[in-house]
Image (cartoon, rainbow, N blue to C red; front, side, top):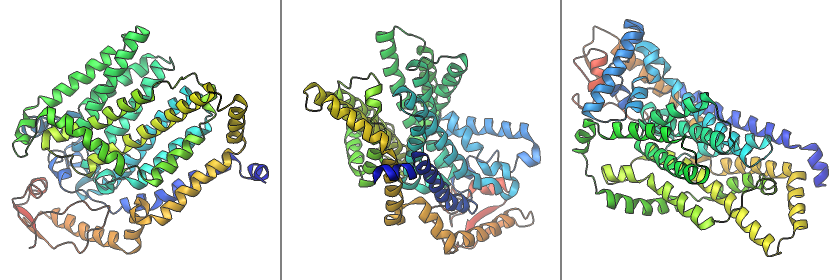
Length: 493
């Protein structure tokens, strides 16, 4: 019966269905993005760039980016790469109507997919798996992350929060892919070294979580290459990462920002980060996450025979990964005495899923080796297991699709696609968009200088982040007042 089904439902057909499922689930997300608009820091960092391109040209726009970097570096934060992205949020290219902001989730989703694809493309080559599994891994992780992000608003629909974390996280995945390609698959070219060097410096000017994690990974890899392979070629990349990180850290603006928050000592932050790492690892070890990761790993069972990894040090590997994961909590604890908002958790969650996948794959390899050494798991049994996976891989793939589909339905209220579909169906997104467009028309009316907006009738989750304040002097209102040349902007009490 299974063999007959295997002939009908081939692995390629299951993959096609998974691709169609992905497209189907993306539709409401992309559709809802058409009703999203900038808010809060989008205007704060767009003071010198929003409504500039169409009126003054590209050089004025670039000058505005430079002014914003300078202002932020000395007055608020040193993350120069991030501020560059903040200054170029999509609404900058939509003129005074801010109409291009809908590109925000499209950009974030695309870069996330590219990052995962690049990473797993090299991983598949490294463990000598079939190329078709690249798509199962990429789509499996892509759907899992996209649907279950801890903070969907700040991770997908609000440019300032999403670009600060999600874009740099995606770029780090590409960077790791290049590291694997160069130093473990020996595919060294001048081009990938240049890209690697650029990414190292650019990422170091982004959020401190990703920047710190990058430095840790590069330090560990340099130690491995130096002592095991006598290769010093990665030292330059590490130097760029450290230099960029240092430029970001020593910015005068960081001290200005620190005055408004309560920090903690570095030692205490490091110690507490291990506790928060354990806490989040427990919270995110959900049935859905475990099942999806496990099904993906089953597809890779034949690779244990093909690759030459020994899987000898599980405790050391788990401890090392736990330390790297926990280090993600340190910068925010040190700076603000807490682990921050959901936009930070998003990238921690992504790295958690990838780390868990690696740990699970490694542990299975370790126990497999031990069972074979002790003759509990014979070579014949091993061959039979591999044969089953190869012959009935469609069942595994179909199970993956079925699990994802079922849990998306049963847990629909926590899924991104359902939440965006809901606000499209009940009209919240459309109403919000119409009200926001009225506000834009008022802002563009040069005759109106004193602006008092009506309150919004609804706040559609997850596309809405925050509104203007009732206080005209609020930091939420001042940037848009300057951009549109008004006396004041506020919302009615």
